[in-house]
Image (cartoon, rainbow, N blue to C red):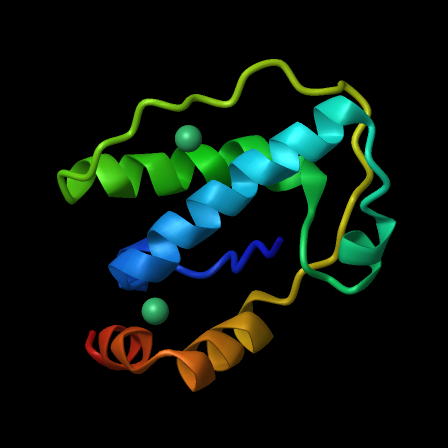
Length: 107
Ligand SMILES: [Zn+2]
Ligand SMILES: [Zn+2]
């Protein structure tokens, strides 16, 4: 599970949809009370940003005409804060993906 927290408009289809799916996995983990401290310590997820990030990605998906029919439901009220570095994630994402690289390099 990984939240990239980069500009959704710049993400390729695969990575936009991928992060969205992973947010719903995170939702599932939180509701099942699973231990995700490894993901938090490694800067991969920030549960406190689940809802706003999900809605931001969902808006972009709708904007592009992709299907979105999965709102985030009820999640625990107390969430552990994470520490994600979006600038480093952008570099990592572009290292992995030619299409994201192209999108991010166009204004
Ligand atoms: Zn959704
Ligand atoms: Zn990509």
